Amino acid sequence: MLITETDEKSRLQWWKDAKFGLFIHWGLYALPAKGEWAMYAARTPVAEYEQLAKQFNPVKFSAKEWVNLAKTAGMKYLVITAKHHDGFAMFHSKVEKFNIVDATPFQRDPIKELAEECQKQGIKLCFYYSHVIDWHHPHSIHEYYNNTWDYQLEDKAFYRYWNQIAKPQVKELLTRYGPIGLMWFDTAGGLSKKDSREMVDLVHNLQPDCLVNSRVSHWPGMGDYQSKGDNEIPMYAEDTKPWETPMTLNKSWGYHIQDQDWKKPESIIYKLVNIVSKGGNLLLNVGPTAEGLIPEQSTKRLLEIGDWINRNSEAIYETDPSPFPYEFDWGAITVKSGKVYLHLYHKYCPQNELVLCGLKCKVAKAYFLANGIPLETNQSYQAEGDHHELRILLPSELPDQYVSVMALELDEQ
Ligand code: FHN
Image (cartoon, rainbow, N blue to C red; front, side, top):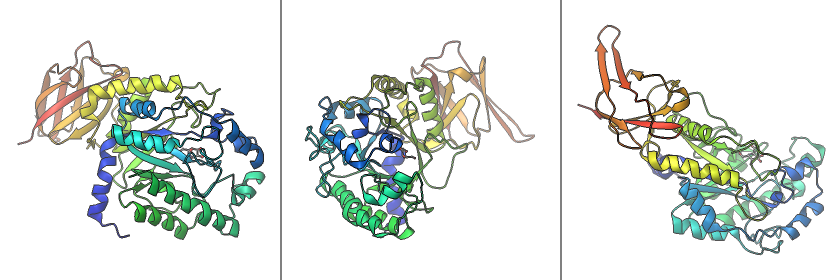
């Protein structure tokens, strides 16, 4: 399918405007509760790992609650692991019995339930799919048992998997659950350019508006947008491909009972603001339990972030990145037509006043976004050195938690 440049811009617009999404790593690995690589780490034989399915009965799972949590947290899309590296399908696959409906006492299809709820609550449903690594299938066995990344992809086992499982399952995901926002592929090491292209085309042929992330391939330039490395935030705004940072709330993706190394809410808000000011999206992860619950530590953080976004949404959604090509020690900037938003990190707040150099437009009005309280400003210009300076007087009390946003309305004539 040929996608023109104009199509490409409008296909991506919802996602570029969205800024914030929920990542969900959920699968059988929630039972051992040691993260999503548990099977590999313990070199669990496939037959033994399969037994976990018989105990997987997440009766506390509620699609309504999960989607509602994402919404309350200010997230606009949700990416769930339809199949991770362990090969277990979290949906009712007809091509592989190792799936949540056929192999567990739960017998429900959570992806179907999430699809219905996402439709109802206006969140874009998206899928993570491990298209190359599949420890349940013989093509991965060599690498799996020998602890080597020396893939044998060009061999028959790989193509059996590729043609009989990977492609048909992607087709199932894109034909059974309504419109899908994006396909999030992962860990494509060894996949040929031709096979990567085939996967991208498969998605676009089935759902032309569905986006594909760059991890569909290790060959550069593939996919609609760039997935940064895990937890990676670039130093500078990038004007190449639109990008997204996948990020954990603690150190793990899948549920890990011992990992209590939680990021502070303020640090996550800083990271969100930093990412958005550089033109990126944040995809923030939770790892639900085997009972089907999102851990309380995660929920608490998401609600706190949602609270902050709720007061400052105008400075986050549908914004453009900062036009300043450097980071500020006091915070970050986002812009919209006729407006500039200064996100002031309380921890690094300057004393008395904030000085911004290089803003050429006249500021007609300045106020705190959270409560509308006006701010006193002073603008000056020195012809020598073409130096524009804006000084904003800072009150002793800031209106928000962690980050207070100052809105500047510009007089653009
Ligand atoms: O191996 C996976 C890992 O389990 C997790 O899914 C992350 C999420 O970005 N991706 C891979 C490593 O980059």
